[in-house]
Length: 186
Image (cartoon, rainbow, N blue to C red):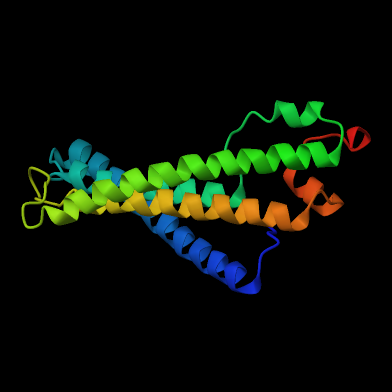
């Protein structure tokens, strides 16, 4: 993944991606081993893993939103880019894709703000935090994952927009952003 960004932003992006990958790997392993343990306990020992749903849901929230942030960094989300295939010039595709990043940035910024309000409301209600019923885990933990995920998605949308604007409609940009367009259509 190449983004045309200043060196300090490239280093920040690289560090954040490494942290997210660790979170994703660890959370995937936790989910897999937990479900394995649940199956073994249930079917071989006729026992149950007490309240695993409560903490496994927290892990799943973190995994989902960190995965979304990683997808935003890689620009690998599912999208309907059929309009880019119709446009014939690199400049028109460049304008369309950067406009799309701008809209995506605005939506992510609004969602980040709402997620911040959700976390802020949770923090301000301390010590009366909402908690899960059995293990008494605070709802703050998964909500923090939601906020950080949206915040990172917003950051990466801004980085893609900045990179696209810095590169301009060049051949390198076009190959990276519109790989599905046939060479003869460029």
